[in-house]
Length: 281
Image (cartoon, rainbow, N blue to C red; front, side, top):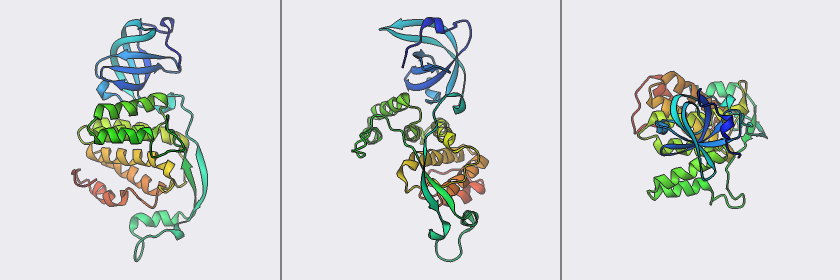
C-alpha cells in the first residue's frame, strides 16, 4: 500500500476514509476510492468496525517516521460495501444439491423445510475463503486458530490484534469479521452486529440479488460467510429487530438446508417476537 501524501487531502472539508483496522484511539485507514493509507487519530473509534466508511472533519495532518497521520472528528459512519471497490469472492460450482437426497427427519417434513423441498434441485457452490498469512499445507495452524488460542488463554488484546491484522491485509477475510463479532457479542451486541453485517455484505457481493444456489456447510470455505450470517441474525434478535432477524434466519435455511447452525430451532421464537435470553441462541 502507498502512503497518503499531504497534497491528496483537503483539510478544510470532510474526508471519507475506509477503516481497515483499529487499535485503541488510532485506526489504519485508506482514502475512499484510493489504495493510499494513513493513520487516523479520533475519538469514538471503539464504535467503528473495519470495513466501515467514516467521514472525518480533519484538524491536523503530520508525518512521523515517514508515515502520514490525520487527527479529526468523526462526523458520520456507514456500512456501504459497494463503495469499497472490493473484488467479489469467487464462487466455485460444486454440482447440484437435491432435496430428495437429504434427511428431513421422521414423518412428514416440518413446515420450514416444505418450501425448500418444493424448490427442487439447485446448484451448489463453495465461496472463496481469503485468509492472509495462512499456510495452505497446514490449515490447523492458521491466524484464526492462533487468535482463538490467544482468546482462550485470556490474551484478548493479542487475539483482537491478529484479527485486525487480517482485515487490514484484506477486508474480504470474512472469518476475521465473524470472530471480531464473536469477541464482543456477549456484552456489546450493537458493535457485534456491525462486524457481522460487514462480513455478510462483503460475502453478498458474490451472490447478487437473485442468487438461488446452496452454500452447504459441508464445503468448509462457506463457513466464514455462514458464521457471519448466524452472528448477525443472533445480534438482530438481541436488539429486538425481529423482522430482520426472521428474514435472515429464513435465508440461512435456504442457503444451507442441512442447518448445521440451528436456525430452524430459534426461528419460531423470533417469529413469536420473544425477547432474547442468553440460554437460547
